[in-house]
Length: 310
Ligand code: CP
Image (cartoon, rainbow, N blue to C red; front, side, top):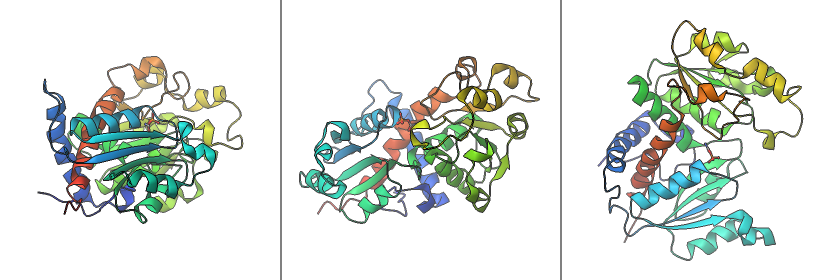
């Protein structure tokens, strides 16, 4: 069996191109499984997984839970809002208490960059990062690249522009690492204030004009403005942002070619993308969500194969 070079998935930065290809090959098989009348396999019948969500989530949380259940794992769910974290318990105490209940794998979303790595270095269970602050969201990048491969046949040689709030986006950073490892060219587009100063060190192109960026690309990944992570104002108003960087049907129809539109969700309809574009046949937003289950099944399955069961 193909084996990953890592014992945890804390970020795409730590993966090799071969790791990503192994995950995609495994996800291809699981995609076939989840489209069968009986969508479940018994692969992880003796494995227990804890989903620890210290930050809000809809897609990622449901997708992981479904992936775990499709693999027949036992699943426990934890949400910070209704937990003893509210009484002052630390992250490591919370996790150690959960692990004493014999949990083999932890899927964690946390507001602090580096939280998943911190955990992976301190506990025996396998750790999957479901988003750590503004740092990385590795399974989102894997499902995004998997969806590009599905729609365009391959990722290598494709031009992908990531539009919007790059500064606060873990999706952007993980996508940049993942797409580059697979041989795609990456551009970021947005107002100067939402592009990090270190961006050139990542080897990506920068464009501030949305139409020029869209003319360049094969795929546009439209990001949400992360108001919850913004402590100061980065642009005059949402309306002004939308006028400069919002993707409308008119802009799309006036391009010289047909491009693929992606969005990691949650969508703010009418801000970064109009409903007409989000629901058009050029958008693969719901394919991304569907592929998320197969990709997460693959990641969980491959990491579970590294659990010492003696
Ligand atoms: N794409 C994504 O991470 O969505 P959620 O915040 O709903 O999990």
